[in-house]
Image (cartoon, rainbow, N blue to C red; front, side, top):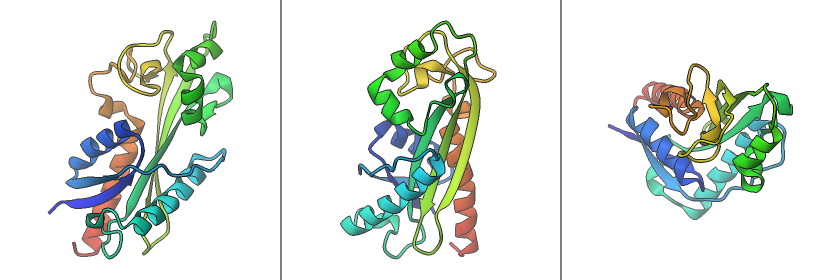
Amino acid sequence: MSSSILFVSSNDNKVREARRILSKFGINVLHYEGKIREIQENSLSKIASQKVLDAYEEARKRKLPRGAGIHTGPTGVIVEDDGLFIDSLGGFPGPYSSYAYDTIGNKGIMNLLQNSEHRDAKFVAIIAYYNTDEEVKLFESSIPGKISKEIEKGGWGYDPIFIPDGESKTYANVSDKDKFSHRAAALTKFSNWFLDKQKDNGQ
């Protein structure tokens, strides 16, 4: 029997990726398109932890969707937070990646790295899970790579400029993004833990 989890996100691209990854583990993603307040912090973990608490409270208050077990079931809520950390920029944009993308975009990042040969970077994703029966659980994954010299076509967000280690193409054009994705890796960690938790609970 498949399980359900509520994914609170305003980003349809993240929802599609989550559904694709979690379906491989028999986990059904119920989506609540909520815009959750994001605290200003230098730590992705702190941002994700507060975000999932706020997301849980919002979902509980609105009583949507009931199938996710917000009220009586063991499933709970997940949110995702990620960041692109560029070495030569002191880790920028890091926890401010969403804001940086909305303001300067990929072109702005390329301008900051203009004429720079040192283009090492990493993508970090954190899946935060919460239900009232325990503390917030965090599942983190980091993928090393570098920033491309040109903005490739396709993908979304920073996909067109991030090349994972061992590849010559960006996330936007690799043959199987899930194989290299920081988000897929974090979701896989969560899924393994979540399924073990359900077995322990006799479900």
